[in-house]
Image (cartoon, rainbow, N blue to C red; front, side, top):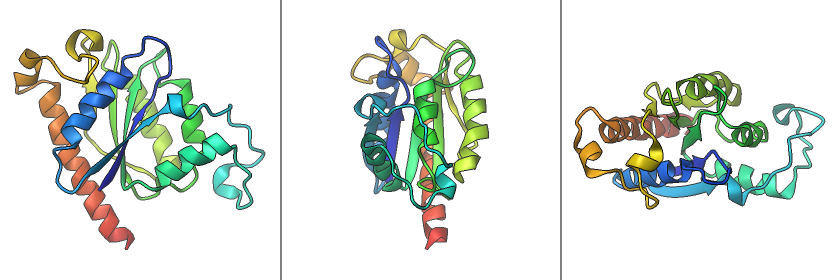
Length: 193
């Protein structure tokens, strides 16, 4: 499985990158899995302004940076989206990036990982409404971090030992969610053939 992990924030002093590194460390334990980090800082796309919706425009002329992002997403078997919750939704930079996609996530699984005062629950809810429009399949289990990320995950993506040892904590939830994502990825890849 070629697994992409999108860092869905570009703001200064963000912590979504810490969460993404933590996810990547656990994902590397999955069998037959290659992990690709996708930092939206590396894809400074203009606001989506194409005249026709991407799914209905066979003659698209896409911004070169957006095209690079589209191609990376298209090369994946599965995706993890790591997002903060801003004003009870996910980030605008993530929405803009998703708006550039057409069929790159069709019949592919997406794992949602969010953080915020309510664990990013509303960001996850909004993403669950948007991703079917891209024909993606969202994993029923989401990973939600209610603790302050800066207090529990260091800059290298290491979760504090006490929290990691909690059998009901985020490490256990992440491990189970990624195992499900791998299952969905394998099943959907087989079905797409």
